Image 1 (cartoon, rainbow, N blue to C red):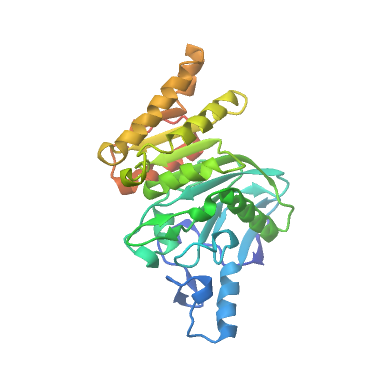
Image 2: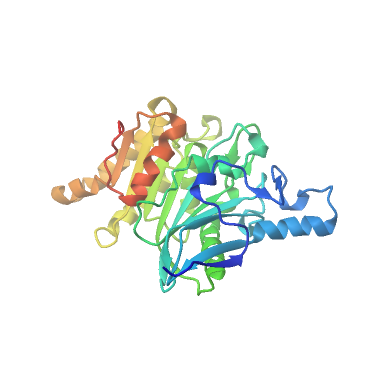
Length: 327
């Protein structure tokens, strides 16, 4: 077997067995400093060295493919306005041929955190379900750190108005640069979200240039604060996206899968289920039955914190999967 070649363009790659451990840079954990305030007690030269360390990325190449790997990146330009810890972006990829001209991209938006502004990104990676073991298509996943608001709350304002497109482009370009190859195009785009990341994901779709082919939400459709307007605000975004998405069937298959817990996200989730039923009512019955395997809303009998971890690996392998909840 040909020995793997390591190409260093940045921060060390980390493998699945380490995802529960906090990222360490220079032997110290980076917690709730932004790039502007990173280790302010250090001399300027040392601070810049730490920042450069977080901006690096490396890949391993064996034969004609980039081997599966992952990386944590810091000071991501697209996320500069977000408050919170560093690193602020997690990447993971499966085996990707160097000759590939297009790859798939998956973005996952995390929910709130009891760690507040000190939340480490590894906390969200561990529960995300971003497992590519069952996926055959060359794919890169991106998990950005959200913007800490207050208490346990996070949102993703940097991903609005096309920001999610810029994030995907940045991640793919950084990966390609590390591999020493031309930047591939993005073929399938998958957007996923858990808990408090669900509504920001809908808002990101509204202004995106690259609409998701597949959209997965795990107990995250809480709706809007009634004090600020219509609690069902955002349903119209899903309605519009779903209509456009179904127009691309069957030539370019997609998916919308919502898994929810009734007492938390039931009303908005069931409203999305009604949208699906209305759209599929206009489709020939035999075809609609096939589509319903990929476009559906269902109750999940697992704990809120475990829904994404349990469901997303299966969905990344097969969009029409029937969950075996009791395995």
